[in-house]
Length: 348
Ligand code: DGY
Image 1 (cartoon, rainbow, N blue to C red):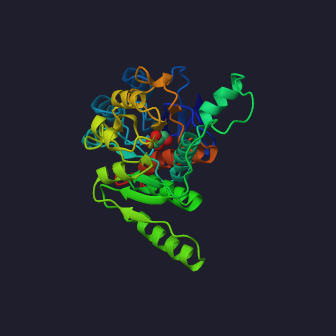
Image 2: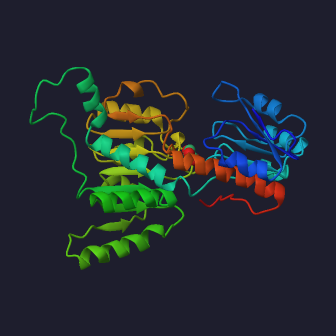
């Protein structure tokens, strides 16, 4: 699909993206916009090289693509200056290779913070109240009347929510769970983020001033403290060498037997094979997963676990956010082509 065929700068998007604002922004600045219409979901390196062709000023790509040495050297040969990942996470991008070939990299932070945190909150609630199991039970025609024991779950109020990775998304999630459900908070952040402290101090004062029961909170000095103390644990770190399999057999064994684990960050943060074993051995332990180690696949056995809720990497999937991500992605590429600053944000 081609927009503004006579535009001076050729910008390629490897996928159709929501809304038209991003296209208009590029067209207004004299870009020819080419959107890949291939039916397959995940493009190979060869597909992308063919798309870029001999002249390409910038590319908007997706987290499913492997942006390494091969693609950046091809983009640079085509005269390209900018690559924008339509995602906040950029573990699929080799930033050093991009720098080596003189290509600037951008991502799309900010616009997906609340949307992603809302999905983590939804999974927390769905796991605590066994909503998916109960829905399946109804649809299977098994409901034959109210019972005192039917789908009894956990009350979140007064329990402790544990957040691992208190950047933008982790902090927004923590706020939702503390303010919305009056949970106590424990969190751990490798980068010593102070985002949460201001909120929690002000919120504590607000509760006190209104004579409401206070919530307790603690910045943990190790991740293990969070694993041991929290009832609901949500993972929000970036994926890099230090966070690969951050949650593994050993860390799972430290969690409470009835804990809930949520992952809306990146699949490889959790050792999925160990997780399946843990779910089998601990039927009261529950998990809500938006991301998987080998997307789009799940490790054997996970799909059979009643104590797991699985959704297909949709944490940022609200209309407002996806249109915002597309707009930011276009602005990143445009910025580099036209010489404005870009939104690259390696520090979250
Ligand atoms: C991201 O942006 O990194 C999410 O995984 C997709 O929105």
